[in-house]
Length: 169
Image (cartoon, rainbow, N blue to C red; front, side, top):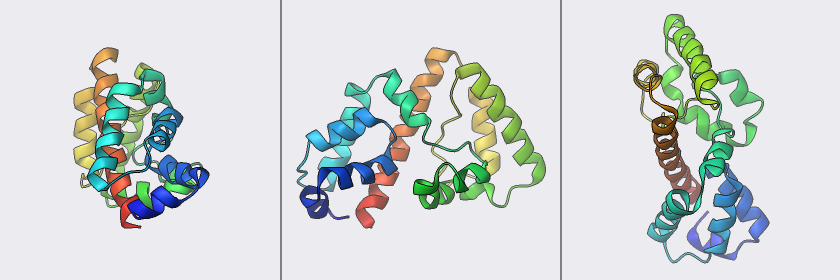
């Protein structure tokens, strides 16, 4: 969608498109409230400002529920059908990973989710499975306070990438 299309399309349709970028309903509503947008830079700036300054932890956690676990290709096909194309491209680094790395990712994903209460969030674009595994290993021992901030920042990166994809059509 172009900026003009976003500005001139009914809010329900635009909200549906925004939901593919970020699963937080508060973020989506606040994006709609800030329409119309002048240009791409304004949409990116607005998105980041809303996410970092107006969304709260409950909004971040809601957004996290709209992601499949890293390497969980089955959930991409089922639960996340509306973002499957974008998420599978983002997680392309796991496509050629060996079984040992995939199993370790799966095991650590489970440990992470049990510890923090949400799935491991990382901006996976351009990262190999081994890189994501190393990042997961480096974050698993963070405190709850440290990790929610890191996951929130990673979600912000993902949202920007998905907004770019939305604008490219």
